[in-house]
Length: 418
Image 1: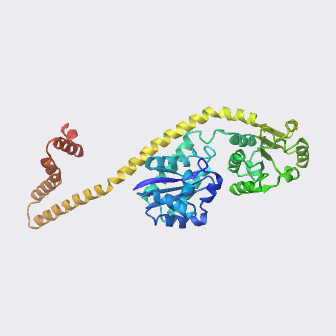
Image 2: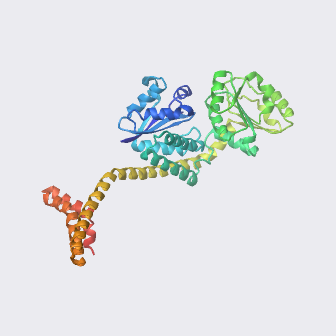
Image 3: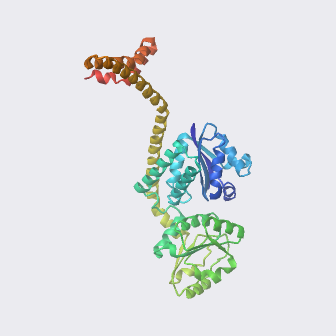
């Protein structure tokens, strides 16, 4: 039986594909039971807005790919360009990296660990979490905790999107009290929304020319939408404004912001303009109660975090690699368990035989010292019978190998030193 991780994520598949293979919470346990009825012994499913991954143990990995496509009424040809499959060590390394935040859209983000824990809980409740996956998840949580506590993986500003949050947090004590407006719905806004959603703002709104795209992002991050022509009227509601569109002319003008500040009674606003050319008029920067940041401002923040980021990633990858080795040491040890059990059972059978024989001799009145001596000799002869016969039957090159094996098993070289 081999461990596998199969799935797709924000690195490999567009949102339109990710949406089609996502599992809602209400379907997850039924899906797990259906999967494990198809030659898959153990299984867990992690389904978030950024990824759908199946962790499973089987001898036939293709079964899981076929199942995933069929379950979502997709053809395998349609889905396979976006799929990845990791076997054995690569699978364990992958789930360790996912839980540690190394594979996230937002490097080091903490929410993914809770989502992996929920995937384990669901699989356990569905009855599809076997010994191997259970141990893998236990090790996963320990690794993620170690990475977060011993490296700075979650502390560094590593992107324009992260820098936007970082700068907003300089102004506002708690982001959970703030309302955030995103103007645009492209890749950069998607990244920024992912970062800001992690701070759990009071309100998160998407305004975009294409309503369908705005609706998709708003649903993904638990927000709402706004028509572009209503921005001027509703701007006073928002404490943070992040804009990144392809407009050739500014969307937010000086007069619009002045009116918003008056309505807000000059409570501060943070405005982040990631567009080139600008979405927010340059003159807004001169207003006293506005903190306006451009692409160049954010680039300076990102640059200052690059060195520490690289160091943290290297440290995290080293920890993960070491823990992957440890997990497979445990897994390989499990393969010997049936042999160990059989060996113990055979030794106990021999013990019971000699004990019964000794009890009969004691019942006949034979001296205890003599019975004990005979018992010890009988046990010794029976226990070394197998290795002795193995050595006697070995010939040629196999004799030397047999001798080394028996010496190793019984520590004969070590015993001869005393």
